[in-house]
Image 1 (cartoon, one colour):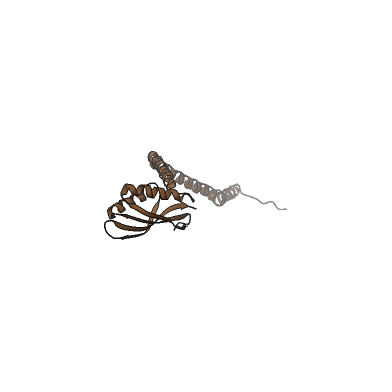
Image 2 (image 1 turned 90 degrees about the horizontal axis):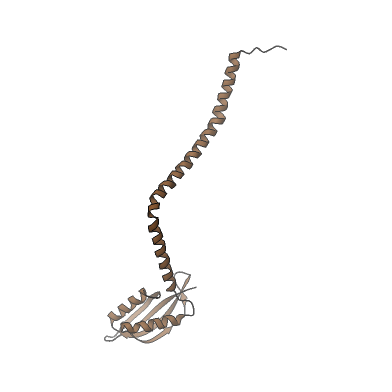
Length: 175
């Protein structure tokens, strides 16, 4: 067997070349991948910090808005009548009509039907009354802003002094 004569410089060159190849093809891509992942995480954290810096001073305003929305939501829930409690609506309408000089001749409950939003039903009432146009406008405005949700579906006004009023007024009930 013949001995292979290796030059020290050649061996050092081969070792350096192999080290460089391993560094270029294994360690460098791995390091670049880690650096890019860290850069993404850093960017994400920087955005969260900036958002927190801008939103943190607004926190009391947000909490106030949340509290106001909770109160408003609770008030709106109370404006919806439970099924079977239609008499509350009738008594509310007749009681308050007197305050607005609307003289109710008849309130006739009709069959419940679905509202545009499928979670709710309309509770309709046919109302025959007498009163002035101005008083009727004030009364309807009151009904839409006060204790319950009402929607006027039909309105016919005939005659003059007193006006004869025939309307279809619907309360709201949750299914």
